[in-house]
Every structure is written in C-alpha cells, then in structure tokens.
Length: 146
Image (cartoon, rainbow, N blue to C red):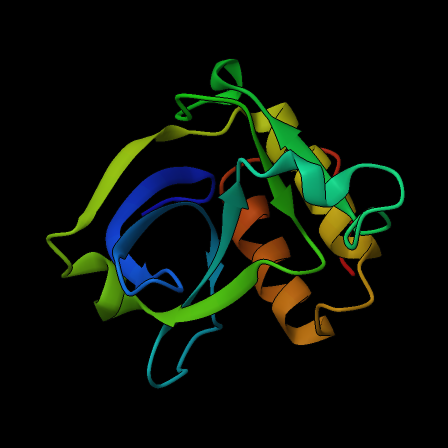
C-alpha cells in the first residue's frame, strides 16, 4: 500500500445497535524499519458534518474536508486529524478480504493533510515522523520533518 491510498473496510466495527459498519480510511504510512509488528498509520473519515459546525463538540478539531475529486471517495466527508488517526497491524489490513482499495488522494491534498498532522497536539512525534518519511518516499513535495 502506498501513502495516500483510500480504502473502504467493510464490517470494521459495530455501531451502538450492534450492526456491522464499514468505514473509509486513508493510509498515511507505516512504522519505522524493524518494528514488530509492522503498524500502518491510517485515518478514518466521517460524513457526519454536524459534529464540526460552530459550537459543536468537535468544532475546534483540526480536520480536512475531502471530496470525490480529491481521489477515491464517493461522497464528501471529513477527516478529523485530532480524533481519527489510528495504528493497525499491517496484516489486519493487507490480508483482510473486507478491505477494498478505492483510489489515492492527490499529492497536493496529501501535503495539506500532513500540514494538519504536523500541527496536531494529539499525534505523537514518532507517528508524525513515520508519516513524514512515508510521504517523502512517495514524492510529496514541500513537507517538513516534524
């Protein structure tokens, strides 16, 4: 998987009623050389924009508005940098029949996203550094090491 890959993970979790729920993700990078197990840093998205309106619970979160023309998504959604970046084992994604690649974020949007990631006080420096090296390897221009 390469940095910026957009994928849909069917049945990744259950909603409060117990029904299976799929989620959209963006692959951001992986842990450094020699880490065991190898972890992928992924960000998930939401279409529930009401949480980000002025006065709402997540109104002050760093987030990115994504559109289908940004690569891979079928509808407009929000990626909440302060809330929704996770580390998953590489095997849980790569070997999972419920994971389907849908596209890739454009290079400018990945650069914008990394700018937000760099600014977040909720993401650790080691995770920011992992993501930086993966984006640099993918040829994303204009990003600075955290």
